[in-house]
Image (cartoon, rainbow, N blue to C red; front, side, top):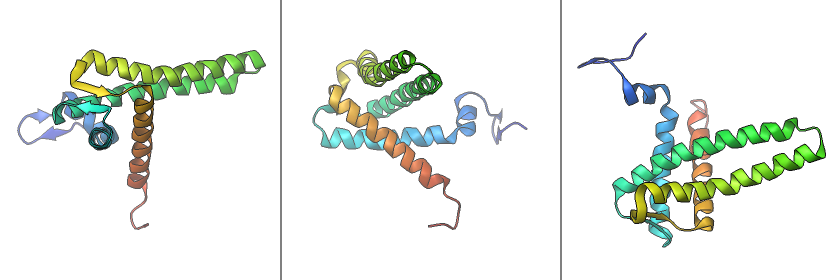
Length: 150
């Protein structure tokens, strides 16, 4: 069964993808809200326009999804490790991914947006990423509650 619109027939491209993954769109909206609150209340976090903050939220969504996937792979390796050496190596790799992801986010934002967007330094971006992930998890939990339960 194919999704259709009244005007143009089957839905293709990004709209089709969004219809299959509505939580990703909700994540971007949550990221926009959190990012704009950070812009308003943290002097180190800067975005020249709302459009840039929206694009930054999309970039953060993509980057954080990749980081979460990579962390899952490393955690699986850590759980599967049977020797102390393998556990230590996986633990170090997990730390590198956790710390490196913040550096990656800063570098990507700088590369894509230059001076028009700044997420501050390592500490502000770490706090921002934690706030984004916590907000995302909270909104998803609220949306997944069965109807009628409050």
